[in-house]
Amino acid sequence: MRSLTLLITFGFIAIILAVPVTEQEKKEQIVAIVEDQLQQDTVEDVQRVKRGFHHEPEGVWKKKLTWKEDWVQVWRTEKKQAWKQEWKKIQVPVWKSIEVPIWKEIQVPDWTTKKVPAWKEIQVPIWKEEKVPDWKKITKPIWKEIQVPVWKEIQVPDWKQIWVPEWVKMGIPGEKFLGKDHEGWEYTSHDLWRKKLIWKPQWKKIWRTEKKQEWVPEKKLEWKEEWVQIWRPVKKQIWITEKKQVWKEEKVQIWRTEKKQEWVHEKKLIWKDEWKSIQVPIWKEIQVPAWKKVWKPVWEKVWVPISHGHGHGWD
Image 1 (tube, one colour):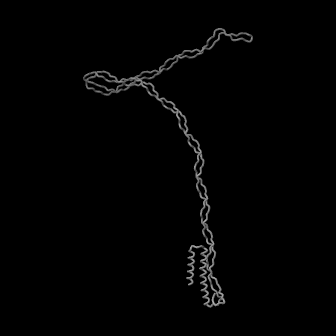
Image 2 (spheres, rainbow, N blue to C red; image 1 turned 180 degrees about the vertical axis):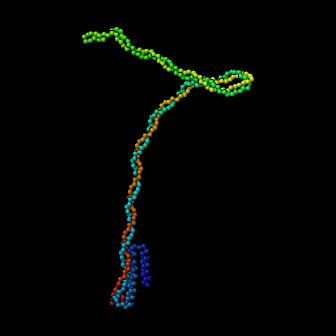
């Protein structure tokens, strides 16, 4: 029966602890339940002692609920300053080598054309009458060696009259007064000479360019015709060589001024982006151990003597 009572008591305590109230209210409710239970147990113990007629000092063992302080470890959240690494963009001056265009005048070779006269050999057709047999005509190609006139430049000796300066000695006739001395004597001279520049003719050998006609052999393809039986007059076309004056273009080198773009190196101050590592303070939550003072209910067994009064009942 007593065990059942204790079980019910602790059940009420557990229900009170589960209810969301303050710590002080919980403590007061638990103390009230425990004192009520102790009072009931004390009455039962006194009744048992009176029935037993025990001669020892009368008293009862009572359970006393005391609160014992204790320290439990808890974890407390605190803010701790820490340093976090971050990257900050900064502007750094640097010298950068750049290329700047400039214009430079240069002389470049060029070619221009001019027209000069020249002789060109051409073939001119002419008609020639000849008698051919009135038979079956047979033509066959043959190579014929012909003489073609060409002009060749040669150097021929020649004499050219030139005039060469020459100094000659020339006499001056007559008497010439030269001056007086300190005593008054006069000085004269006879048979004086002087230099005279004259031009003396000479013949100098030179080389003169002339054109000389020569004949060179060439092969010419001709068609030979053969006739049989009869002869009759026919006209035959032949080609003769003639010279024709033409204008020939020649290239002459000249120098032309042009502007050429060149690049020179210069230094320019620019700002370059760089990332710098910095330490930034931050607050970090950490769990630190701490000790908390708590009060635990403890049951102590104490002997409580019973004193008899003048009445007939039990206190």
